[in-house]
Length: 234
Image (cartoon, rainbow, N blue to C red; front, top):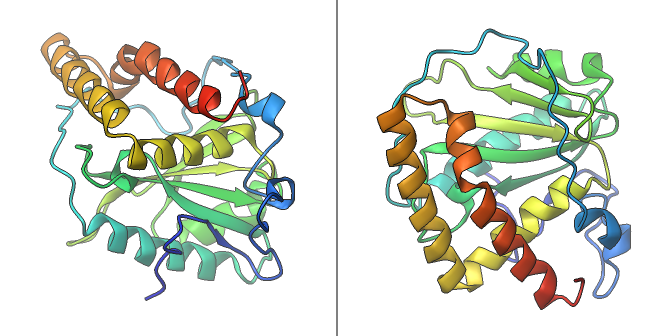
């Protein structure tokens, strides 16, 4: 089993090295600062490839150190499945399950970068072969595609595989947010508090995960401002 690098750098494809110190611009999973600090909110109709399911109880649980191993196993499968097509650029563990000490929904979030997310034939069939199904398509939001593990086998976790292209601002933001929460317990605790409150409110109202995410949005953006300010970007 291949584990992600201890420094939090992404798993990248052959010939795509992580950037040297001060050389973030060569990293295909990073982006231009001007793009990172500019959010694109582009709601689109009819995003769901598969019908959305009825609301289910949003469960927030204690962090499980085994989530790192679950990520490593799935990342290996994704990378191996895409190797014949040559579409793989990089993959990283993002979202709350990637932050030790942070309560989370027991659902893995992975950021996958491919050469061109619009060319679905180049990666979707291969990902189907390992149990991941295309669920959402968002062309106006960084050409995002979302694949889900809809029927986990015993011992597997549900997962959200977010697919983007190289040098995507959203991928860079997700990694920056993760790294910030890992070393800033005050913002980590603040984010955890809004997650728990939002889950309770959404469950009481019979809302979807989309509604739950919307409830967290203002605090999420405030923490992003802390991330950007700490780097002198805003």
